[in-house]
Length: 392
Image (tube, rainbow, N blue to C red; front, side):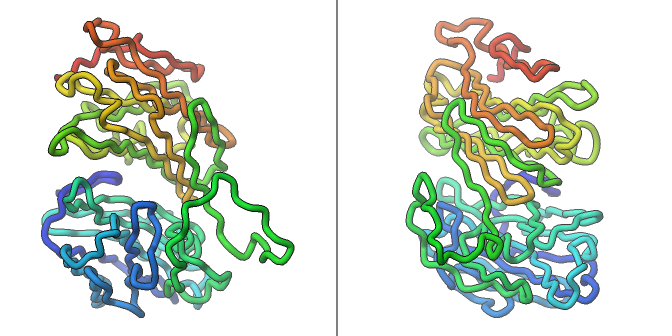
């Protein structure tokens, strides 16, 4: 089964391989793994697997030629570990001009699952290829494909590792102790603090309702993830939608019936219908072609009343610079089938707005309750006035 970016599936076996076609000229391609807690951070030195430390509790790695294999012992993985990120990092100490494109292609494989990344034209120095993660007590494999221009320093800092401003080696540096919860506002640096240029600072923002944030264009794909919990034994079917308007005035939507495409118009791809509790992803492969995007979620009729309230959904946006914006549903409605979650305006910056607006009341059932949101050519939007969905 070929996986597309953002897709996930139950693990098949206990071995994951990463292979590449060519070795970059004058530079080493190092494969590594980061064991992460629920906050997405490495807990310590035993949270990293790389060429200098090929075995930690629950995860071992062997590299032969242009292939690395991770052997997983699920029972031995520490309880606090929620995700294992599988990464490729280019050691450019001997060839600063080298980039991942010289490897031509990366493939992650597990049983019958495979995810191939075409590296042509990519200038990144590091890449999260995929991840093994826990969902409702079971392990799953996700195809990620998120790149970092800053190489080791950027990807390690993204996972909470203290990094010195010395890019000469791609070996992961010592991890910081498990961090305390971040304050709402970062303290002012003391006069003796090191210059900001010596470290990589990545944004992680959670938006309040009606709050906006603007991100500098990072180039490359933007990934949107809708994740949710479910009632009972993981039951619950939410559907993730992206309505779009392109710069040349074309409009449409990507959703479970029309998964779109990352290689052709609209250059937006959906991971597929999750059918039950979990997550769905939508990747905007070429954000430079878009003017506006509206992300929304639909709760199937079979979910019954109270699904948005009981499933606790949230949306997370990530870009190629490592920025991460979380848009939670703060006032979940228990009688609507639709919610418009976030609006994007793409120009000189990517402007992200938390909108959380619910469709009309579905109890007693009304036709308007099944009508989808709409995104208009001028970027304005409304709810309960679009096409009727009615997914049983």
